[in-house]
Image (cartoon, rainbow, N blue to C red):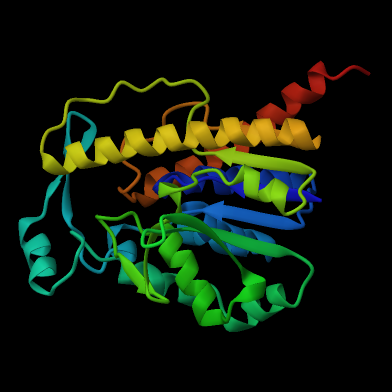
Length: 301
């Protein structure tokens, strides 16, 4: 069984889309299992449908308004570097309404429902492929994996949305009596889960460099401090997930093909810039192409 696993990474998901496009269209890889976290969960349904151009159009056209119904920060650009600062009015408005988070991401839920039709959902649910998204259950302190086979259309769209909700900047969702948030808070790269579900070969797209190249700029305000802290924690989670995945793979004779980003794409994946995301999609495609050429060149004849 071959599986495609895509990590979390916000706007960097555009790079993963480009990699997946090359693997599926040029190498003609066919996957039985698609497993994603956060932005990875947004991609996998369309990839399973072979609707690559459709999801590419989404990723290369979204902006902040496509994601946030109430954006909690302002984006400022100085000397070519983008930074965020608190949007005091929006945050106060959110708290006044009784929200537990700084911002809300209801527009993202609407976008998901607009791009995944009920007919497409039924096609996948009745087909042989399994599509699984990762969510974090904060109430029960555990990671959960939601398969399309166990969900209605409305439920699956909500689980994809929940998997992407980077709290406390995005919506905290209460469902089935529990509070849920971004799947990346528990498992950024669900390689181990793919192996548990029977994968014997995995293509894992990691939206992070293999070796740390990043020296973050000093925090400018409380929001940039929070995003830096969360980024640090998620990076640690990601590295741990990869180590565990490699360990489990070695004991199950599972092959893992890793596709890391070759460079640091952004220091804030909550900033959705369609021009950059268009460039990242193309970069992902070209990177997968170069990597495949290099592999073929070193393989013995």
